[in-house]
Length: 210
Image (cartoon, rainbow, N blue to C red; front, side, top):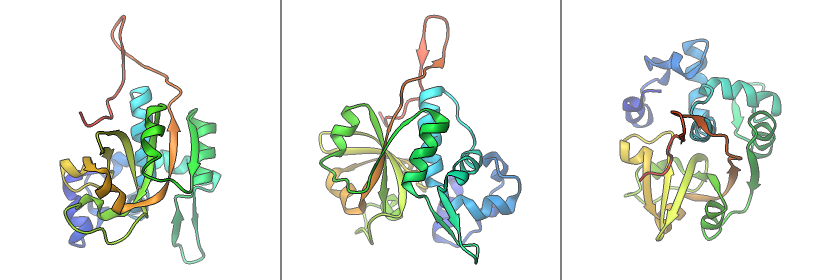
C-alpha cells in the first residue's frame, strides 16, 4: 500500500506488515495484510481495471474475499497460499463485476496487440523482476501485471509491485517484456460503465501511461 516501501520489502527483508497504510487495503488486521499482500498482484490489477471503468473500486482485500469462494486461491494444510488460479478468477469477475474474461493458457506476444485493439486489457504473467528490466530475466511468469497498450513495438503496462514510479507505470520494448513473459494471461473486456462526471461529461480513470 506504500509504494515507497516496495524496494525495502522486495530486496532488503522488510516486513510488509509494518506498512503504516496496511488498513487502506481493507485488511481487518495488520497480520492479515502481511500474510496476503504478496499474493494480491491479480487483485490490484482487477482494482485498476474497475477504477478505470467505474471511477472507483473495492479495496484489495475486499476483492480477495470475493474471489476466495470461487476458488481463486487455496490454502494447504500448512497454511501455504496457492493462486491466483485463472479460471475461478474469470468466473468471479464475470459474475460479480460484469467483466468479460477470457483465460489464455497459451498466449504469445504476437497476439497481445490484437486483444488490446479489440478493447481488452490483458493481465499477463511475468517474472517479478520485470521491475528491473536492465538485468537479464531470471525466469518467466509468476507475477501479474496489467498491459494497457502496445504501440510501435513498445508494451505499456502497470505493475502492482514496481519499486519506482517508472517501474509501476512502465513501458518496455516487446522483446524485453517477452523475456519475462510466461506466455499466459487473462483478457478482460470492460463492458463500459462510465463514471459520473460533471454535467454533459463522462470520465474514466486513465490507464495508458501517456
